[in-house]
Image 1 (cartoon, rainbow, N blue to C red):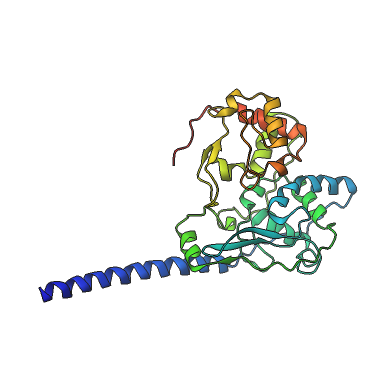
Image 2 (cartoon, rainbow, N blue to C red):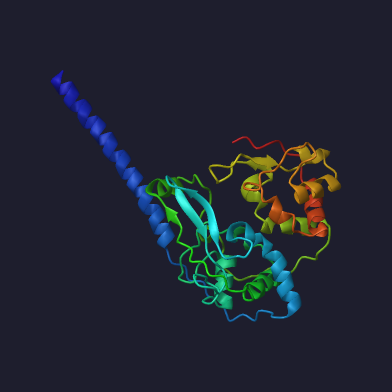
Amino acid sequence: MRKFFKWLGIIIGSVILIFAAVILFLYISTNNRIEEKYTININKLNIPEDSVSIEQGRHRALLCQGCHGDDLAGKVVFSSPAICEIIAPNLTPGNGGVGKKYTNEDWVRAIYHGVKKNGNAVLIMPSEDFHNFSKEDLFTVVSFLKTLPPVDNETKPCRLTFFAKVLVSLGAFGNVLNAETIEHTNNFSESVHIDSNTKFGKYIVNISGCRHCHGKQLNGGKVPNPDSPPGANITPGGNLEKWSESDFITTIRTGKTPEGKLLNPVFMPWRDFSKMSDTEISAIYKYLKYLPKLKKFDA
């Protein structure tokens, strides 16, 4: 019996040791990924500085406000002592901001490639979506960011706990380092004609992060934010089939669906999307109605 307990202890100890080694490996793996340096070579860019381009960039930069705040001076995006603190940095040229340090090329690296000025990947930066920006939209966003008034806000770096880094390695939060999956070329796409058609609607959907919450096929899915409910099915297989274009526009403008459901702006950024033009929202509706009728994604 003594020998049995001795071997049982050895086996349990070995299992604990192997488990600890795996956890440590996952933690170190995430650290290495965060600290990896990317070299993105970009030739000197000629960014437009005319008022029309700046206003166009201001409109597209509405996509930035959800994380960086209405004044783009940075804010806490997510905070949990046990998991992490995700803080979007100050983009203005004020104290604590990156605006006075970034060149045209630095802005493009960060937005289009998900890579900071120091070569590290930007954490929780949706560059996978912004990689769909047309050359015109990308450059006008940069032109607008360069005109931001200075706001003093010393934002802290993002913080991931040991536990969070293990979860990142396991893919629990989805793609948190977009720089890892982007093709780092500068083959900027041509502009998409602004019209209330399906092609333009697809473009707006692709740059707006809809697929992060609603799934690759937009029929719903698990959301990376652990506090968020599952993303809804926004193909004609969901409630959209019963909605008119007017219903859809009203939902985006007010955050209230035809069924009377109030959309939580923390998880569905309808307040940001409500600032889109009627043409853009109409185009999104037409694109979504054009999609195949898919069943709700079942994880």
